[in-house]
Amino acid sequence: MRPAGPAAPPGPAAAAKPDSAVIRDALGVGIAVGLSGFAFGVTSAGAGLSLLQTCALSLLVFTGASQFALVGALAAGGNPLTAAAGAFFLGTRNAFYGLRLSTVLGYRAGVRPFAAHWVIDETSAVTLAQPDRRSARLGFTVTGLSLYALWNLTTFIGALGAEALGDTDAWGLDAAGPAVFLALLAPMLKTAVERAAAGLAVVVLLVALPLLPAGVPVLLAALAAPAVLAVQGRRERAKEARAAREPGAGREGTAAHPDGGAGSDTTTEEDRA
Image (tube, rainbow, N blue to C red):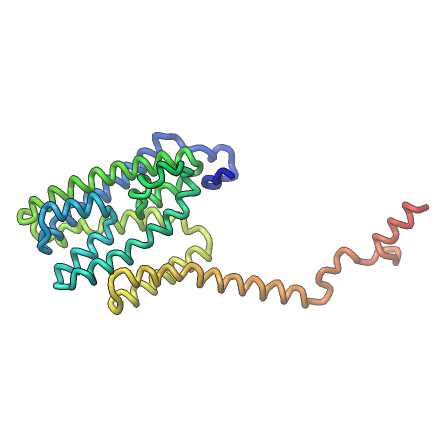
């Protein structure tokens, strides 16, 4: 069976999205987030990694949060194995993105290993925001290509010019990626359940962040979605149980006929007559 793409909106006018709009949105995300590669290049060089090691991380790993977690732990004097483990745990979220995007994009088996390298927060957000498979593929490709190219270019420049740029915190470049991702995510939280899951995830993350190793708070925050869904399911079942216990529930179909007999029986007698 061919996997289904994103659900199309109910209105026929909103079923398609112009290619120019998809490309515009994808390039906006790719350029905005790609510039934060400057911050990674500078941070990595400051942590003691060579230019080759820094560029190899961006080329081969290509997941900004994990890269920052790795070099940040190394800069703080952490054990390389511990730093790598934290970065690995933080990057496991991309596997969950991949499960969803595989059905949305519907790529053939030979293409999927190459597309998997671009499965990150930003490409997932742009892809899932599209109304159909064609737009989803276009958004994924443009976002992935622009972001990958610019991220690696700015990583290289940042690592070369680390001393000239100075403190990256003063530039605020490290906040560009999370800010863009939140801007893409916020309009997608349309129901109370989705907003509750997002809010709980934020609370869990803020509580766990100073207490647990890098990467673990993100995994704990991901548990907010099934927790909220479980509570919502229990509430729905309790509501249905209360409705079933109410007097007269489910008896609408056997309501008495105005003449005194049951409506269904009266109709049957009339038909027999």
